[in-house]
Length: 461
Image 1 (cartoon, rainbow, N blue to C red):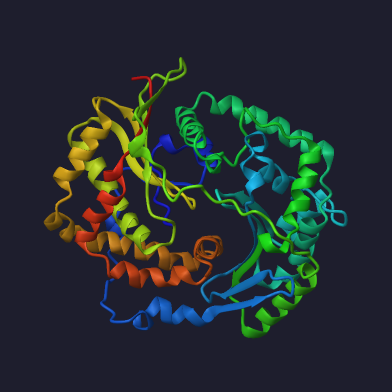
Image 2: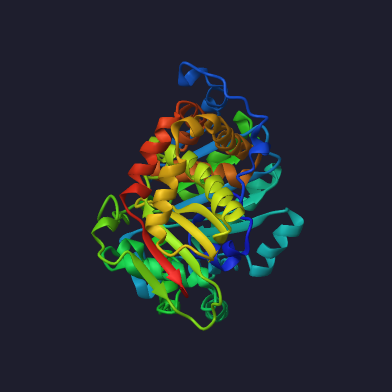
């Protein structure tokens, strides 16, 4: 998914921790995309990014069913490795929000064989960094390091995944830190609004229970041990890696992966899915939710609406539309009309994919849904979008192409493609698909998303 730059304090660190949220404010930076040319290709195979990368993926399954995908990326100076852990239905238990995050963090702090100090020292001796994150539909545990160090680091990493120490004293320290963070979040309007979004949506579908630690969480040390045991299920796991590997290095890496992870058992689990394809915002009688707080002295707004499933062709049309809306909103509502201090679009990524309009310090808008809708209809003209669409195509295409220069971004692309499409190579098809989108698609995408209803959450109007 495209991650647009965040240019205002509205998208602060606390807000970003809450959820996978991509948003943009101010200009989309058209001048940065002018180096990308949009040639017309008759077939997918003719498009250079696809044709140059299609054969760079090594794909195989371990005997326990775990898929392994290794990307040979010639432009990368380091290597990266991740285990993707698909979320099961148990992860929607509201009282256990944040359990996966705490478990993964605790796994970083040592294994039965390698101490926390030893793992920390790898950052200096091997330039290795262990990483973890939680998404709406999966979580991941991995590391980055120089290519020549990957086998030695993988040995330590595998131990931390398979037999972590799970120190109880360290667990208590992590829990105390989570409680402290909550105190700061409660005075963040962004956090409070997103919390309201999740509370409202989870009333009809527990799928929208947040993934991170909240004031309602009740997590005990025994929960962490059970969570880790549940991680060790081959049917939940997918392994991805990337680096400037040659064929022999790929074979050697796969051999070590086999040795380290083929012993993991595979058994049935209930995969986390939403009940519905989309949220029925149109049927909600009250289209605005208000949050009052003595901490807030400005008016913040989040508008939530359905958007197409991640990685789908229809999502790509919405992705270009959101770039267009970013520029339109900021130019007209901020710079010309001074109705807001900042405004941008984004999304909460998931099987039930949601779009976001985020507004900071609203100065004059009162009837948000009607005014924003009318404003877009008035300005979203085919002749106008035809003049600009190539610029947005360049921005999105540039984002996809530049991901090949970054280990973490390549792994991000592979992960979302694998989870949502079942194919880690899906993202290399996007430049070709983007080139086929028309200005007419903008209007169709708008009517299929924002045009079908927006639920607004507001503070201190």
